[in-house]
Image 1 (tube, rainbow, N blue to C red):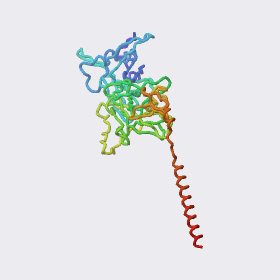
Image 2: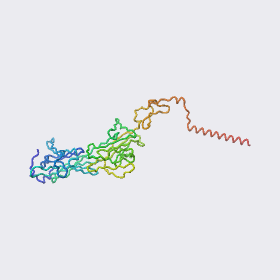
Image 3: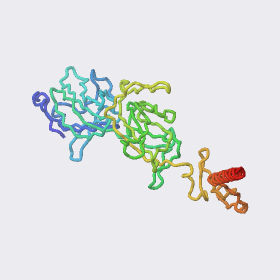
Length: 403
């Protein structure tokens, strides 16, 4: 246990300079605060009386989740540990700018409730967890110090983990499946849906996608691209073929687009890219743009200068004939009304099975003469020449008789 020290013998200057051994963990699903037990008792603070509470008078009843646990470490030392699985509880204070979200937690000690008089230090130690809204930030431990019985705000850092996937349905329940080492196939005009979500989230987290687009290669900066979401709304360039299902509303964004064929490209593939960031919706500060109707052009501006880029793909675009098993048709396949049909070359006809082409011998036994356009033109020229020769001959004979 810790050596006992009479609080009346404490020197105030020594108390102000007392260093605590602390650590801070910042995650979207957990905030952990650890303070050395003995350092607290030596400073005259009772660990059992500590709570996490917001500014103002301490509540009469503090939720058990906001109280510490006294844990024994492998080296025998004791630590005062707070574990917040709801990181927006216990009177947390939030602040947000364009780049970061900061959550502030005040560790305070409860005043005694018994006795005629009280002698205790009204300590307040503030811990800050800062989450970058768009990038992953490495965490580093902190070492806060008491200063005039109230520590300066101490800081830690965390990160949001975001995943992105492709689906065949609007509800995003049927993911595309790869075929071995080959990418999944999708037929032309079939919808491709994509969803980006925060892996560990709570009700106050809102994911925002101001911009999404498709490219034929993995390079998001490709000059050849197809805009899907612009300024948070469906792109006006091809709005009838784009569905924005969720954006600026909850912990995920989802949208869909009818697949298409790239012009002048042999290997037909689609990659999808989105710029996203995270917003904490504690004061209605995460509202998105008002998307326009089809007849009205949106002229507003959504400012997301530091959004993080997420990409997924590829999908291989195929025709209905590409979906058939090899050699399904004995000669060739054509697409009619969006469906594959077997067809035959000249001199063959399609059998009743709809797949096999049979040699048409009758067409060769009774050949039909075919005259080409060049052959017809040559006959006309010869007839004209013969006609002119006959005219010249007649004229010559007539002149001879006159003479």
